[in-house]
Amino acid sequence: MQYLVSVIDDKTNSATPEEMDAINAFNDRVKAEGHWVFAGGLAAPSTATVIDNRSGDPVFTDGPFVETKEYLAGFWVFEAPDLDVALRLAAEGSKHCNRRVEVRPFL
Amino acid sequence: MRSAITQAHQEEWARVVAALCKRFGDLDIAEEAAAEAFATAVERWPADGVPPNPGGWLTTTANRKAIDRIRREHNRVDKQKEAQMLYDDEQPEPPDAIDDERLRLIFTCCHPALALETRVALTLRMVGGLTVPEIARAFLVQETTMGQRITRAKGKIKAARIPYRVPSKQDLPGRVSGVLAVLFLVFNEGYLATGPDTDPVRHDLTAEAIRLTRLIRALLPDDGEVAGLLALMLLTEARRTARVSASGELVALGEQDRGAWDAALVAEGHRLVRERLAAGVAPGRYQILAAINAVHTSARDVRDTDWSQIVALYDQLVRIDPSPIVALNRAVAVAELDGPEVALATVDRLDDKLAGYHAYHATRADLLRRLGRGQESRSAYDRAIALAGNTAETAYLTRRRDQLG
Figure 1 (cartoon, each protein chain N blue to C red):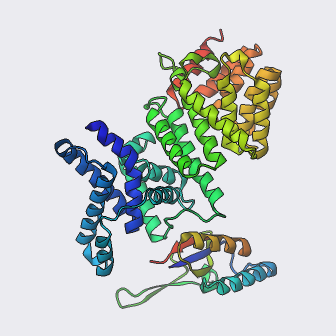
Figure 2: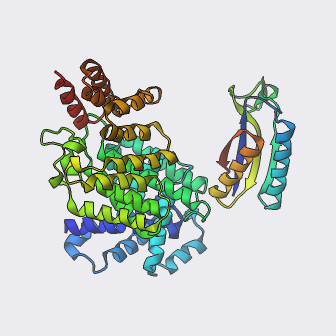
Figure 3: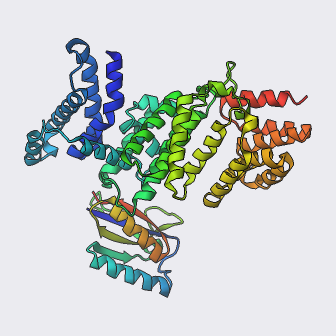
C-alpha cells in the first residue's frame, strides 16, 4: 500500500539548512526501514502549465489548475502496510520538515 | 418474542459485526449482512421459535448473507478467497477471540484519522447497533446527512486502510482515551441534550454510552480511566430521575430529592471509585470526576457535602486539565467553602474564554444573586438563557431569574 504525503506551504524551496539536515536524516531512516518510494520538492505553482489535449488539439494555460494561498510544495510517497504506519511516518515528516502535511492513499 | 430479539440485538449486534469484519475485512459488508441477519430473525423467530444459540444463529445467517452479497459482486473477489470463506462457514469462534474482535471494532470506529462527530456516529452504528435514523435524530441532523457521514467514513477506512486491530502497546493509552472521549460525548449528549425539539434527557443515549463503557471495561478491566468513566456515568445516571421536575424543569444538585437517586447505581459507582483508590495509581481526569461525584452522592443531605474534599479533587483536576471549564466548576465548589465573593473573583477572570458558554453566565448569575447584586444577576441570567440549548435548563434559569424580584 502506498501513501502520498503532501507538504503544505505558501512558499517554495523555503526550508532552512537545519530543516534540510533533519529531512535528509529522516529520509535515510525511512529508506533503512523499507518505507521509501519517492520524494521531491516542487517549484512554485507560478511555474506550472495546464495542458488540455482532450480534443487532440493541445491548449496550454499558464499557471496552476487552481490558485490557492497554500499549495503542494513537496511530497513523499511511502510504502506502508496500513494508515497507522503511514500516519506515524507523516507525523515524523511534519516534525522534521517543520510544515503541515496531508496523507492520502493511492488507489 | 420482541424482547428476545431486542435482547439478542443488544447482546449480539457488535459481536456479529466484529466477527464479519474480521472475516471479510470490510465494514460495509459486515454492517449490511448483520442488519439482514437481524431482519431475518424478526421474520423467522416468531414462526420458528428463538434458536437455542441466538448469537450463533445470527452469526451464521449473517455470514451467509455476506457470502451471498460477495457472490453477487463476484467479479470483485477472486475464487480462491471465496473458497476460503466457504470453507470456514460453520467454524465457531472461541469467546475470547470474539471479545477481542469487538475491541478491534471499537478502535477502528474511534480512529483518530476520523472526525470526532464521525467517530461518534460510526461507533453508535457499528458497535451500538443504532440505526442511521436513530443516530440522525440523536444529533439533530438530516438522515441523509448522517447516512452520508457514515458511508464516507466506511469508504475512508477501506481506501486509506485504517487497520482493523487493537493498537500497539505504545499507542494504546492515547487510543483508549480517544474511545473514552467518544463514549463520554455520547453520554453527555444524552444527559444534557441540546436543541429545543428534543427531550431534555435522552435516556437511550446515556444507557447506550453506559452499555458500551461496560463493554470496554470488560475488555480492559485494568484500565483506571475506563473504570473512572464508567463510575462517573453511573453516579450521574443514578440522579437522572431526580434531575428533571414533573414540570420539565432542571433540578439543581442541591435541590434534588436524594431519596429518588438510584441506590444500586450509586453503590456500583462507589465500588468502582474505591477500587481505583485502592489501586494507588495517580488518577486521570475521569477518575477524579468520578471521585467528585462519589463525594456528592455520599452526602445524604446537600448540607452534609464535604466541600473541602471536592475542592481538593478539583485542585487535582486543574493540575492535569487546566481548562477554563474545570476552573469554572472548581469555583462553584469554592463558593460553598469560601463564599460567593471569593468564587466570583475567580469566575470573572474566565470571561474572555467562556463568554459564549451558558454555564459560565448561569454560575455568575447565581453567585451575584447570593451577593445581593440583583441587577447584575438578572442580566447574567439573561445571557445564560439566551445561550442555553436544553429546554429543562432554560426553564430552570428562567424561574431563577424571575424570582429575583
